[in-house]
Amino acid sequence: MDALSDLTWIKHLYSGIRLERFDRGGYRVEAIAVPDTARSHNNPYHFRLFFFDASATPVMAINLETDILGETMLTVQSGARREVMARFDDMPSWDRFRSLALEIADGRLQASSPRCVPGARSVRKHGTGIRRRPAGSA
Image 1 (cartoon, one colour):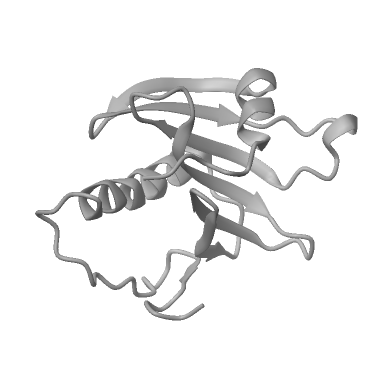
Image 2: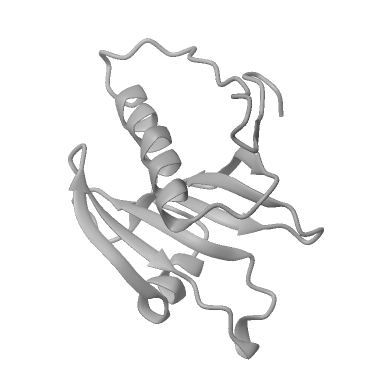
């Protein structure tokens, strides 16, 4: 995996609130809450999970963020690529975000392994408040 090209991770890692630090799938994970302050009123992020391999730069970030229209979404960044993985009707709790983010991360980390077969598809789960993007759509 390529290092993140979006360098906001540096600011958030040092100025955010560290919620957790743990290892997962051979990666070191830093879990950050991004505080909403007067200086960062245009900041879209609420929570971020940064995945580090042996380097000092994260290779993946999974984020809970709000877009300019106020829609809350879960996004994945890797290298220069950013994907919206889910949209939420209501702001999820930290525990809900963490659970969804680690489920996605496990799939991504396995997908980078030669043993994995790609092509898994996400579907909407009724009653969760999440609208998942169909596989193959942009």
